[in-house]
Length: 480
Image (cartoon, rainbow, N blue to C red; front, side, top):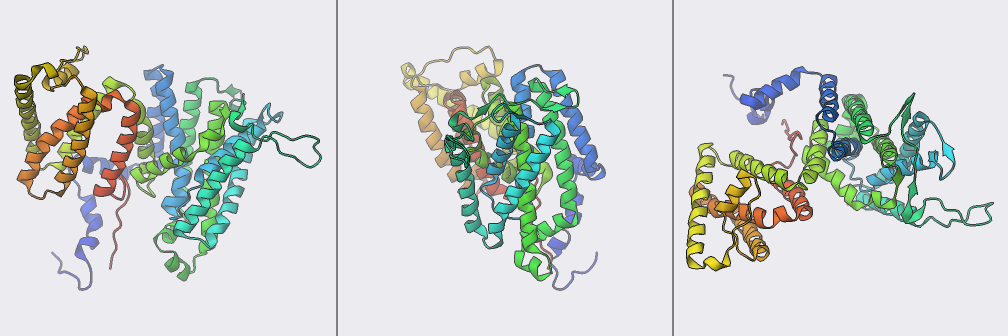
């Protein structure tokens, strides 16, 4: 064993060695992932994606998968600006809208122009990059919150213009001209056509988006590994230090904005063709929040994290629409959370058994005290769900009880997070887990729209507490 070096943090110096020595399933995945090149992973992703239409003919499932690919492409562009370069851009969705409306202008009866798909997508990419360059100019003088405010204003202005530019007086025109279709948008857009192939179904567009996502990921990966990508990383870490080392920080910022805008514009064009129409409401702040949630969840600057984040943020909320499937996902996630939180592993099993005993005691006590206030639930046909409903004590006014249980659950969760003693934390977790199941069965599973929002919010909050770098983000490690 070598002697410690003076002035060097040994823990930091041994970081790579410690990461590479992982054992078990995580170590196996890490070894396989390190040996396969990125193009092999992308081919594998495409092959797996192509099997989805063979496994199901449900257009809803295929459409959800297409949305995952679409949002993954959009998040790749935002990741260049925010994750690689560290520029807080809150007007990114406007470029997505510019690409969509540009496709509507170049491929619809609204203008009477019907360009081939290849020409349309190339023009959209160039136009969006030019708009990104223009928006990147203020970034030369603004940083941080000030840049965020300017870009946010750009995004809001775009939506307002697309909504209101229905009576515009142009030079040489005798009467006002409708430039955007207003709130009614532009409809009946041309489908995507490549050579002799015309996309006409949900499956066709899904496969096109899947291939486009793989190609775009490959391009962004090589861009990240290039000199420009390394310069963006230096700019993100410390702009002053990068400029002191002779890097053209101003040009790098404009390049980041233009590249991200080009990807967003191209994605917007594909979206417009898939939807067959564009409306101003497609590009509101909700979409911006969703894209930021994807890259924050996956990890800023991480390409695999973008793909994983888009899968979780887009697919899981739609899965929650199905009550039976959502219930199975909820209990699997709860078991995974317990297994990750309590170590050694036997504590997870002990906690589940203790919670079961606690529920039996609570049910027997309440039925003995006031049996008329509780009503059994109707059989669902699922053995698992019926067993849970038979174990819980459900009051006649389940809505009110569920609201109170959810409020008490929040208080208990906050209390558990502050308890340092392992024994007391284990004891308090028993009623907490019981209330979690009670709140799910009485309230959360009954309102999927609210549950979807709670899922995303709780997921991000927990992530920021326990893994602020994201699921697949790289931890910041400094060598002194």
